[in-house]
Amino acid sequence: MHADFMTNQVQLVLNEIGLRRSALNEFITALLPTLQQKIDHILPELIKNDRLLSHFVHENLAFDSAVRKQYLYLPYGDKQWDGLVQHSLKSQRVFALWKNAEKECMSFRRLI
Image 1 (tube, rainbow, N blue to C red):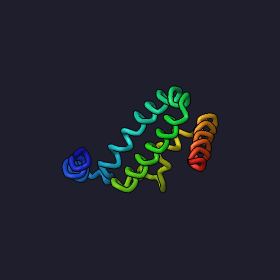
Image 2: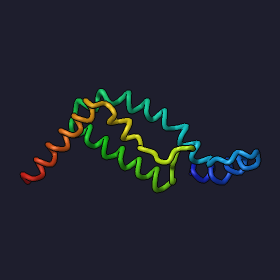
Image 3: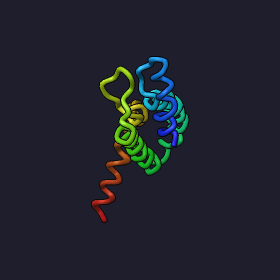
Image 4: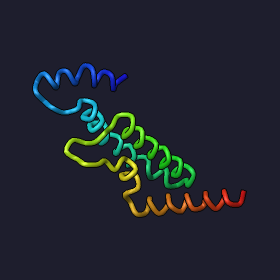
């Protein structure tokens, strides 16, 4: 719904004023800092629970994939977008906790 509005309404206005940018990409770009702040806010709680952290990273990867594939997102002037998962796992501590949680999960699955 928002994508349709950005593509069909806002994009027309941008084109009329001569701004050659994707309204949808600019909208996504504007939302990402808020999502990064939310991630920073919830990570201290997530790292207390291995399964919750693992699930969060899985959902984070799914979100990144959807933004790339469904909306063809690429920040203006960039050749690639690393996704929010890069932001989520930028801390060596968080990355190590997530990696260990994944290893434990794999070990558990092998037992089953």
